[in-house]
Length: 162
Image (cartoon, rainbow, N blue to C red; front, side, top):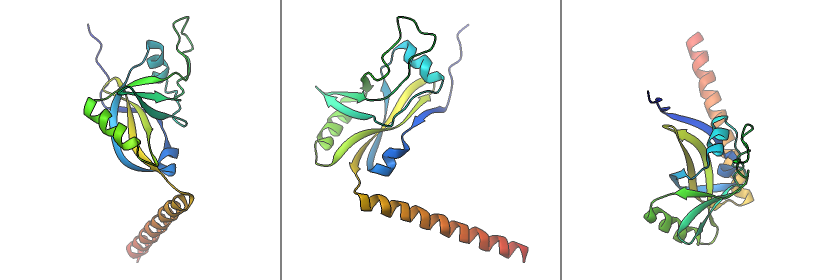
Protein backbone atom coordinates (compact mmCIF):
# COMPACT_ATOMS: atom_id res chain seq x y z
CA UNK A 1 0.00 0.00 0.00
CA UNK A 2 1.31 3.46 -0.91
CA UNK A 3 2.14 5.84 1.89
CA UNK A 4 -0.03 8.97 2.02
CA UNK A 5 1.84 12.20 1.42
CA UNK A 6 1.90 14.99 3.96
CA UNK A 7 -0.51 17.75 3.11
CA UNK A 8 -0.26 21.41 3.95
CA UNK A 9 2.76 23.54 4.69
CA UNK A 10 5.35 22.64 7.35
CA UNK A 11 7.95 25.34 8.03
CA UNK A 12 11.59 24.21 8.26
CA UNK A 13 13.49 27.50 8.50
CA UNK A 14 12.89 31.23 8.07
CA UNK A 15 15.25 34.08 7.31
CA UNK A 16 13.86 36.85 9.52
CA UNK A 17 17.02 38.91 9.09
CA UNK A 18 16.31 39.25 5.35
CA UNK A 19 13.10 41.20 5.95
CA UNK A 20 15.03 43.47 8.32
CA UNK A 21 17.95 44.08 5.95
CA UNK A 22 16.06 44.34 2.64
CA UNK A 23 12.95 45.87 1.08
CA UNK A 24 11.16 42.84 -0.39
CA UNK A 25 9.94 43.75 -3.87
CA UNK A 26 8.65 40.42 -5.24
CA UNK A 27 8.48 36.84 -3.95
CA UNK A 28 8.64 33.49 -5.74
CA UNK A 29 8.03 29.92 -4.61
CA UNK A 30 10.36 27.41 -6.20
CA UNK A 31 11.41 23.83 -5.89
CA UNK A 32 14.86 22.66 -4.87
CA UNK A 33 17.06 19.87 -6.24
CA UNK A 34 18.21 17.87 -3.21
CA UNK A 35 19.93 14.61 -2.35
CA UNK A 36 18.16 11.99 -0.24
CA UNK A 37 20.18 12.67 2.89
CA UNK A 38 19.39 16.39 2.63
CA UNK A 39 15.66 15.67 2.63
CA UNK A 40 16.04 13.41 5.66
CA UNK A 41 18.00 16.08 7.48
CA UNK A 42 15.36 18.68 6.60
CA UNK A 43 12.60 16.40 7.88
CA UNK A 44 14.34 16.61 11.25
CA UNK A 45 13.80 20.39 11.00
CA UNK A 46 17.43 21.42 10.78
CA UNK A 47 18.55 24.14 8.36
CA UNK A 48 19.83 27.71 8.33
CA UNK A 49 19.10 30.39 5.71
CA UNK A 50 21.00 33.24 7.37
CA UNK A 51 23.85 33.75 4.85
CA UNK A 52 21.95 32.44 1.84
CA UNK A 53 21.66 34.13 -1.54
CA UNK A 54 20.60 33.23 -5.07
CA UNK A 55 22.87 33.60 -8.07
CA UNK A 56 21.88 33.10 -11.70
CA UNK A 57 24.57 31.40 -13.80
CA UNK A 58 24.02 30.42 -17.45
CA UNK A 59 20.21 30.88 -17.18
CA UNK A 60 19.98 28.61 -14.12
CA UNK A 61 19.19 29.76 -10.57
CA UNK A 62 21.48 28.45 -7.80
CA UNK A 63 21.01 28.76 -4.06
CA UNK A 64 24.30 29.39 -2.19
CA UNK A 65 25.34 29.26 1.50
CA UNK A 66 22.27 27.44 2.83
CA UNK A 67 23.39 25.23 5.70
CA UNK A 68 21.72 21.82 5.76
CA UNK A 69 23.63 19.73 8.33
CA UNK A 70 24.73 16.22 7.45
CA UNK A 71 22.28 13.45 8.16
CA UNK A 72 23.37 11.71 11.35
CA UNK A 73 22.66 8.19 10.12
CA UNK A 74 24.02 8.82 6.62
CA UNK A 75 27.08 6.94 5.43
CA UNK A 76 29.31 7.63 2.44
CA UNK A 77 26.21 8.97 0.62
CA UNK A 78 26.04 12.03 2.89
CA UNK A 79 25.98 15.50 1.35
CA UNK A 80 28.18 18.57 1.86
CA UNK A 81 26.53 20.92 4.36
CA UNK A 82 26.99 24.16 2.37
CA UNK A 83 26.92 23.09 -1.26
CA UNK A 84 25.13 25.09 -3.94
CA UNK A 85 21.68 23.79 -4.82
CA UNK A 86 19.74 24.25 -8.04
CA UNK A 87 16.39 26.04 -7.91
CA UNK A 88 13.48 24.91 -10.05
CA UNK A 89 11.84 27.92 -11.70
CA UNK A 90 10.14 28.64 -15.01
CA UNK A 91 12.31 30.17 -17.73
CA UNK A 92 10.31 33.44 -17.71
CA UNK A 93 10.78 33.77 -13.93
CA UNK A 94 14.52 33.17 -14.21
CA UNK A 95 14.84 35.75 -17.00
CA UNK A 96 12.87 38.32 -14.99
CA UNK A 97 14.96 37.69 -11.86
CA UNK A 98 18.18 37.88 -13.85
CA UNK A 99 17.34 41.24 -15.42
CA UNK A 100 16.08 42.76 -12.15
CA UNK A 101 19.00 41.49 -10.05
CA UNK A 102 21.51 43.18 -12.35
CA UNK A 103 20.09 46.58 -11.36
CA UNK A 104 22.08 48.46 -8.74
CA UNK A 105 21.26 47.48 -5.16
CA UNK A 106 19.02 44.52 -6.03
CA UNK A 107 19.66 40.97 -4.89
CA UNK A 108 17.80 37.68 -4.54
CA UNK A 109 17.54 36.23 -1.02
CA UNK A 110 15.80 33.17 0.44
CA UNK A 111 13.02 33.97 2.91
CA UNK A 112 11.69 30.56 3.97
CA UNK A 113 12.31 26.85 3.53
CA UNK A 114 9.33 24.53 4.00
CA UNK A 115 7.57 21.34 3.00
CA UNK A 116 4.50 21.76 0.81
CA UNK A 117 2.55 18.59 0.13
CA UNK A 118 5.62 16.49 0.93
CA UNK A 119 8.02 18.43 -1.30
CA UNK A 120 10.71 20.88 -0.22
CA UNK A 121 10.03 24.42 -1.40
CA UNK A 122 11.96 27.64 -0.89
CA UNK A 123 10.48 31.12 -0.97
CA UNK A 124 12.89 33.56 -2.56
CA UNK A 125 12.54 37.31 -2.89
CA UNK A 126 13.82 39.98 -5.20
CA UNK A 127 15.00 42.56 -2.70
CA UNK A 128 16.71 45.91 -2.44
CA UNK A 129 19.12 46.63 0.40
CA UNK A 130 18.00 48.98 3.16
CA UNK A 131 20.11 51.82 4.45
CA UNK A 132 20.67 52.14 8.20
CA UNK A 133 18.06 54.90 8.58
CA UNK A 134 15.51 52.72 6.73
CA UNK A 135 16.06 49.94 9.26
CA UNK A 136 15.57 52.34 12.16
CA UNK A 137 12.44 53.77 10.53
CA UNK A 138 10.96 50.28 10.09
CA UNK A 139 11.64 49.41 13.74
CA UNK A 140 10.08 52.72 14.82
CA UNK A 141 6.94 52.03 12.74
CA UNK A 142 6.59 48.54 14.22
CA UNK A 143 6.96 49.92 17.73
CA UNK A 144 4.38 52.66 17.04
CA UNK A 145 1.79 50.20 15.70
CA UNK A 146 2.42 47.90 18.68
CA UNK A 147 1.86 50.77 21.13
CA UNK A 148 -1.28 51.87 19.26
CA UNK A 149 -2.71 48.36 19.39
CA UNK A 150 -1.95 48.13 23.12
CA UNK A 151 -3.71 51.44 23.77
CA UNK A 152 -6.76 50.37 21.78
CA UNK A 153 -7.01 47.01 23.58
CA UNK A 154 -6.58 48.71 26.97
CA UNK A 155 -9.36 51.18 26.11
CA UNK A 156 -11.64 48.30 25.08
CA UNK A 157 -10.95 46.50 28.35
CA UNK A 158 -11.76 49.63 30.36
CA UNK A 159 -14.93 50.11 28.32
CA UNK A 160 -16.11 46.54 28.97
CA UNK A 161 -15.47 46.71 32.69
CA UNK A 162 -17.30 50.02 33.10
